Amino acid sequence: MRSNPCAYIWRLRDDFAIITVWVDNLLLFATTIRLMNKMKADIKAEWEVTDLGEPSKIVGIKITIGKDSIAISQSKYIESILKKEGLK
Image 1 (tube, rainbow, N blue to C red):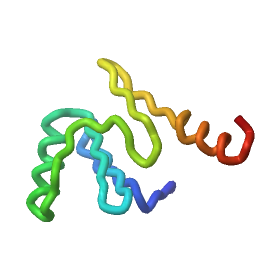
Image 2 (image 1 turned 120 degrees about the vertical axis):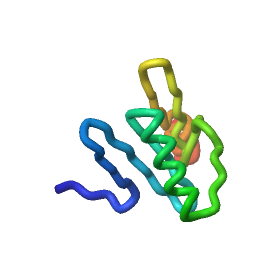
Image 3 (image 1 turned 60 degrees about the horizontal axis):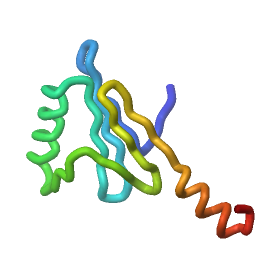
Image 4 (image 1 turned 90 degrees about the vertical axis):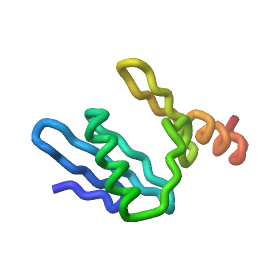
């Protein structure tokens, strides 16, 4: 069994939700809007939260959300490391 202490998966029949945690930031993913709304309500019932909407960037990862896809890129982060090390 694979495990990641910063990612949690909740399965409900054929649907699933994923919560990723980075310090005090959460990213929520769900296969249905209904499941996403339930997950948000459950979290809000326990903690004070601010919903910032769909993410465009987190911890140096650019997130692009399309109609049928999600793309992630760390090119800016990689470029900054290369520049810092004199490899650009």
